[in-house]
Each structure stands twice: as structure tokens, then as C-alpha cells.
Image (cartoon, rainbow, N blue to C red; front, top):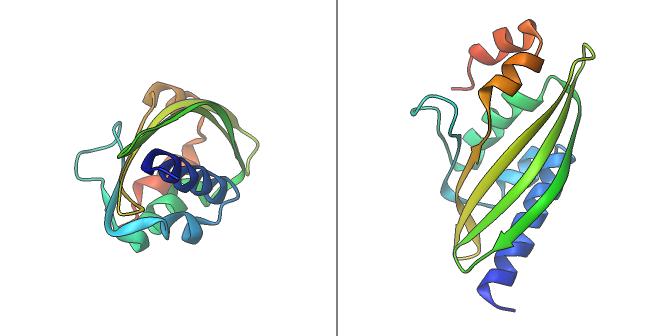
Length: 141
């Protein structure tokens, strides 16, 4: 199996772990100094390493009652995987959102070294309940 195929398998496994909300399993796919951020958030809002990645994901997803993925495209290369997908969020208070996302995973040595997501903050602001924003603003650090 070539590098692109191995990267595809790694990222597909990552998505499986993430959307079944096994955040520790998803984060275990990262290099010890691997990073995760959303381009829409402040520049210093970068999780480094599996422990921080779990904390950051827990902050965003921990108050949801449902999370699923609608995959559109996944393209794998020798050092990166690009995914176009729609995340479907359901909050415990009943609000829902379909968030289009473009994700970039960079890989080296069979581990994810960088993950960044591109999405529209306006979609999130229009859908998320105010209490969730208060929760998220408390931060993960």
C-alpha cells in the first residue's frame, strides 16, 4: 500500500472515531506534537498534542446529543488528505445545524501532524444556542 492509501485509511479511521465521539481514539492518531485548529477561530486557538486535542474537541462536541458526518469528497495524497463534508450537529436543547466543512490533514510517519478545518462562522452563529456559546467561551485551556 502506498503513502496516499495509508493516509486515506488513517483519516477515514479518524473520521469514524470522531463521529462516534470516541475523541481519545481520534486524538491517538496524531503525532505527539500534532496540531488542530479551526481557521475561523483566533490564531492562538491551536491544540497541540493528543491531550489538548481531546480537550478542544470535548469543549465543542461535549454538549451535543448528536453528531454525524455527510462525506462528499475525500482526496488523499502522499502527505495530505483533503475532505469536503457536512457536519450535522444536534444540541441537547433541540437546535440543529448542517455545517459545510473543508478539512485538511497533513501526515508524516503514519501520524496526523496538522488538522485544520475551514467553515463559515455565520452558519454556526445562526444555529447554536446562546448557552453553548457561553460554554465554549470558557475555553479548553
